Image (tube, rainbow, N blue to C red; front, side, top):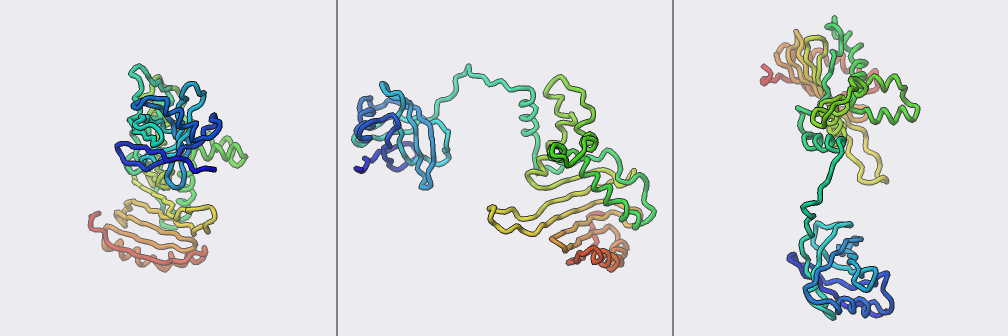
Length: 340
């Protein structure tokens, strides 16, 4: 097959030459067929085209609008400016006829002023939520607990250790942040309908009249926290440990993401942190890093005596971890002057 002639595309951003491709409607020698079409048109004529494919070398295949009397326009392969992709429509002006055909890229035509887009009520709600939600804003992407984790102050630390894990688990399960995943589990028979009905999306279902006041319904108020879980792999819960006792809890999945399906899965890595204030210990911030079967602790306390008490509990904590098959890799306790 004979070599195809070079076709130059010139535009404000410089682009390289391209080769004329055979159109699916063309017959005979594609060099003659394509050049004849553009030869019949005056220099300065504009064409609308659409990008149909992108190649690894950066070139793009462009489908032109039909040139009468043809029913299908020719295809050209050309190097386009960066930022364009498959499906983008472009405007090209013929600046030089055959044999050295050249085009200049023009800006895409703006939609007519009369062209209006009407969004449904649901689409308006989603648009407002996405515009207002910031996955990195910790002041809006948390789950607010409606009731304390424990109904009464615990008698001692042992009671907290026995009761708190179950209530923390329920706080995550019934938070509403994973409602859609739980619906899928229910559809697959892995979750009961009664469990799904306990989630806040199924409470207070009275419809609202406008998109604006639907932003505060149970069906929409969890979206910032859901975006945080999806984008940052983080869950934040704020409420009370027991009545009158503020408590904040964060969980973050820090497992490195796999770049391909063939890559060996990384060992699971989780970080969880809590903030609370107790009568004896004062303000305490604790962060636990869990990697596989190992755990590291970083704790800051408000009072010096609290630091001493926490150090004294290290051996007991280590024994508890060993009995569950977990190795303590770090235990750091320090006084946090900022909490004073």
